[in-house]
Amino acid sequence: MNLESKKKLVAVVGQGCAFEQEPMKDHTTFRIGGPADLFLCPHSITEIQQLVRICKEDQIPYYIMGNGSNLLVSDEGYRGVIIQIYENFNQIQIEGTVVTAQAGALLALIAKKALKESLTGFEFASGIPGTLGGAAVMNAGAYGGEMKDVLLEVTALTKEGEILILPKEQLELGYRTSIVSKKDYMVLEAKIGLDHGDYESISSLMEELTEKRTSKQPLEFGSGGSTFKRPEGYFAGKLIMDSGLRGFQIGDAQVSEKHCGFVINRGNATAKDVRQVMGHVIDTVKDKFGVTLEPEIKMLGEFNTPLTP
Image (cartoon, rainbow, N blue to C red; front, side, top):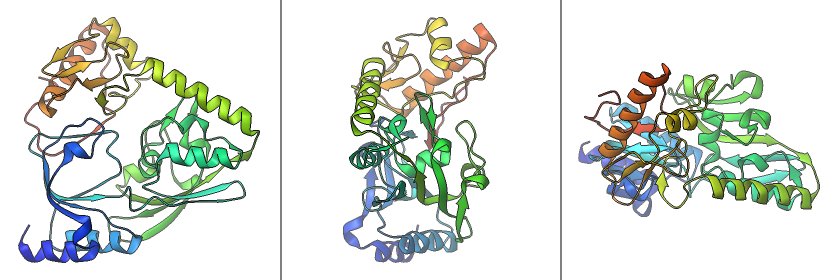
C-alpha cells in the first residue's frame, strides 16, 4: 500500500480511528494474530462505502470484521486493510416489536435491550459472542433458535458498492449460510421481528441459557467459538470426543477438555498451533468415522500449515 492510498483511507475515518501495524490478537476472541497493515474503524455507511471504493480503486486487499468472535488471523498478520464494523457502528433502536440495529451491535446487547422492552424471540442469541452483522451472514444459532427465525430484512453493501435491502425471503438462510455469504456482501444493518412477552419469563430463559453455556463451554479460554460446522447427522464435538481427541494439544492450542467442539488458546497459542490441531482433528475423524469436518471459523492471512497435513 503506497503512502498516498494510506493518506486517503486515514482521511475518511480520521487519525483517531486509524491504526498502523495493529496487532490482530487484540481484536479477536482467539487472542491470536499478527499485525494488520492498516486497521480502520468507520462511523457510518458513507465512510464504509468510501473505504471500500478506495481499496478497490487502488487495488488494496481489505477485510470487513466485527468483534472477531469466529476469526483466526495468521501469525504474520494481514497485508492490507482491516475495516472493523463494531464499536463505532453499533446503534440499536426498538419500535414496537421491531428491532433495527447496525451491524456492529453485539447480539448480547440486543438481547438485553429486547428484554427491557419485554420482547421475546431473541433469547437464543443472548449468549452468542458475536455481532449482528456476522450473525446475519452465517445465520448464527444456538439452543434451538437461529437468525432465520427473527430476521425481517438486511441492508447490505455489494462488492460493487451498491446498497441493497434484502427481505427475509431473498436471504436464502440455511445452516451457517445465506445469500450474503454466497455473494460476499457486507451487512450494514438488519431488522429483527420479535413478539411481546412476559419480562420474568424472558429473563429466566436468558439466565438458564447463560448457565448452560457457562457450564458446558470453555469460556475461560480464548477461542473462535465452535471450531467445526455440524456434519449432517452428527455432532462435531461428539465425533472428536469419540476419536479420543479430548485434550489433544500442540503448543498452547488444545481440543477443549470441557467441550471437544472447541479448539482453545490456553495462553500463548499461535495460529500455526491452532491449524495443526484442527488438521489432526480433521484427519483423525475422517479416518475413524469417514466424516469430513469443515471449519466454522474463518481464517485470515497467509497460512503455511495445511488443515490436512
